Length: 291
Image (cartoon, rainbow, N blue to C red; front, side):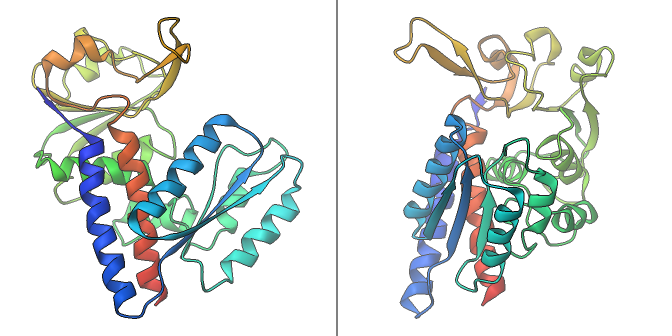
């Protein structure tokens, strides 16, 4: 069993980005800039934004976090997004989700300029991704593809089962793995909460992408010997033995599934770091397109 180490892989990619940014600056170009909008006081969202801000520092980007109370109106938020769309000094713009219930997330996402939509959520970027055209790909699927490539995992002709059908992970990774290329050229099955006898599908899978949002959902008897397992799940579960009173687990019962796998991601330290570094890659690409 080989561990798909997202920390090491992402650090290698960060070094490549930092080197490229340093060269750009030496040639008189400005640094890429990412702006993040954070609405409200959600603890997880704050952590995610802080991690993205730190990653920007690591690779030499300029970054800015705009923080607003959850009382901000939808109109006020959309106006700020349109203002940033017009700012030529900003390359990437993300709005941290989830948003308060009185704000339409789809409207917010599709107000962001597709040229600055480094989260890859805008309908224009999603459509291009489905067609296999150049686009900003949602950071988590992009990170998974980069990890498979980094470890030279052969996907051609393999059967991949994706657990979960979200627009952020499940659907885009299923589409990317079905496109021509390597990673790619997979036969893909999407399973979800309404799928009957999920284990019958997973037992036949060469590759399993677990993004269903249920801790330890994927059990040992659901995986065949030699499978590649990528765990996207991340959930806090109570644990009185830990200083913080909880531990982080994924959608895979790692302890029992790992011995059967050829490759598997840990949680934490697997897909998470790859998601953040993919956001950096998208922002760098946005800068190049703006030049």
